Image (cartoon, rainbow, N blue to C red; front, side, top):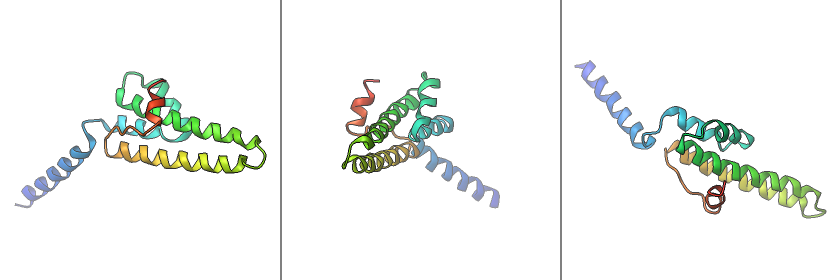
Length: 121
């Protein structure tokens, strides 16, 4: 009797996991999540060209990383440079978190503007 309940319990857990993973492997999701962690986006972008799900997130992650890099160059601007840098860091962190949540849920959210730029890579 206890064995049946245990099996039913784990079957229910697996069912819930499958509901959120959308058929992507754990490896694909981990590489996709890495795509939103700064310069580490280059690893899946270069080495996982045959995985559409990973490439989708790697391209968006690269655009977000590029936003941060552009903000870093703004420090040479007198007066507004530090403000632009803080804004680019804030935007990069928020967009990266949105991307990571998308990966955790097994989705491919098209982040506005970022997705449009990512399609051109």
